[in-house]
Length: 452
View 1 (tube, rainbow, N blue to C red):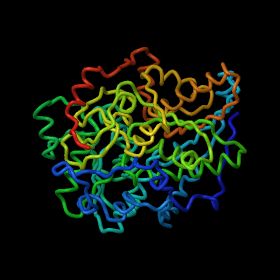
View 2: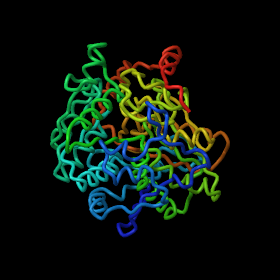
View 3: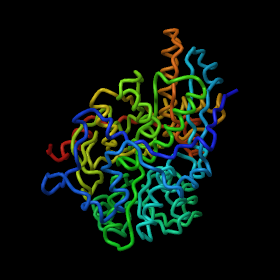
View 4: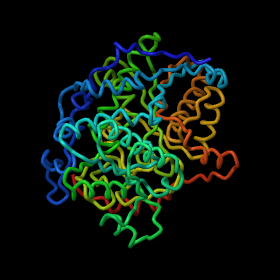
């Protein structure tokens, strides 16, 4: 039986942790204007973000107060449980202790509402009427649909076309919460029209969907854009996960030797990892950090650490991050939330500085791990989260060989109850592994701007 550790409500975090002041010296570099190559100021983002979020994006404060209205909504599902996976440990015959933070208990079924609610709150305070956003697997889109509904706002979601077709019930969830959901690329925006003119059968990508959502926000008054990962303020909001986990691990009388999470844009892993990374950066603990991604979109394991655009149509400022190139279009793997061409600048900088490692897995590997987890711990995990499970299992097996009672912590960032078609394909033997070809990666990365 699993052991759950629940944080008392009166111990819930009231502040988000901002890792920026603790980052290695020289690791933080500013966004650049693609036209001039010079650092941009806050005014460059004012057309699509409220000033409160822009302030958080560049903040040098270690902690930022969580507004009371946001705290009250968080209490619908927070605190989330920290669970020791005793049955999985037994099945693996490992001396390692495996813990996971379960974010699938949120109304949207993942960690994404942690930032969606915060972003909706600040936009509402700024007088914004509608949010335009993108989504890959649908977890972010459903979270923003939920958040805007709670604050009486409208929401338009540009959903990557392959996911729109693979995950119809995610679309239905967004529509239940009042959002308009469009299969991207669409013919509604100039960005979408350009992509469709070049490739009428385009499966879409997060980069394309971002281009459409940014254009929507920039060309309409009272409309702002919201991003579900990558940017500093998004990762900031997610640290409520790790701050809870720090307190819960203390309640359980343990401290992790290794912290694991899946990465697509980086938000769920950063949310869990950063409060523990704080101890490493300040010299208090020697914790190992491992991020897991798909071989079909190997952003960190094979990408270049360079300035690049966050979207396909090159409408965003340039950010220094691990990237496969802004026009990278990945295969239609089922881990839709991990199909982004770039990684959060904060995570990229930590990898570059040697504080974090990454590993890539195929689809069949992660579904094998997901099945073992579901059959021992009863939760059917999202395909994205299953990358973290696979990494945790591998580390637990290493501990078995070494006879090491290592403490492993990973983020189970969401459940997989809307992903059963993917499980059907795996169980029937029809799930295809895909490693993005080296020549395609080189071709895409050749178009990265040569700056900085």
